[in-house]
Image (cartoon, rainbow over all chains, first blue to last red; front, top):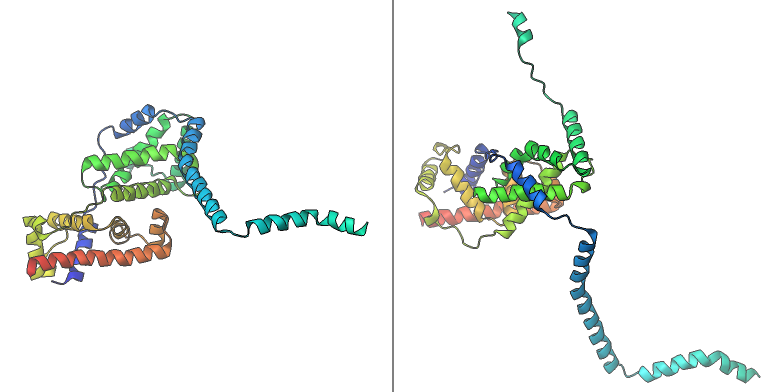
Length: 101
Length: 209
């Protein structure tokens, strides 16, 4: 069987038989009824829903950052050195002044 | 007898600018809170939306659900319609995307087998194998068989085959309708043709091996 030819023939069949554009009776009324039945969304409800949806990702990010900070503290042995260096930097101007006086 | 033509009813064909003007007025009315004006828009465009939806769904209840979804979305998003292009184009983009969502939500896991093919479809295939020119594409069997094969394709493949090959649209038009880029449409079209050929080869193998 020539599959390429069959494919062409079937696509031609689909082109030759377009679907009907018939519309069920009073379909537009059904749409309008659905529109009327839908409660109008107020902006507060949208904000409320969005904020609730944001809770889970925010908690996940917070936990990840917490774990990362905890692990970083555990692995970092230069914590004291950093604090000492910070202190030296802060008091450097006053130390220099005492030396001058 | 020429004087008789003066009494013949005149058929006034609205030009596209007048149609667009009417659409713009209806849309403005809907946005001003006159929901009843939306009924006129629905009445005007529902045949096209129904015809498009019937390309992707077989059961009439599914078709009606798709069309309803399209118009509900259109009503909700009407404020985002800028009026740069005709309303019909905007609505058809919405329709195609809703149909694509429908295909993705109703993806079938069962594969087609030759035992599923009806007797008429099998006869049509027999005629095609004997003499391809004798199998007319204007038969119900050919139409049903192509629907069966299209139903087996992935949602993206079905959409791109329908728009490019069956509706004869250009790659640019397909890109605008689907929201995909032109290279993506080309790649998906290439894959879709391959996917369809694979299904047909499978059918041929089952029948003739």
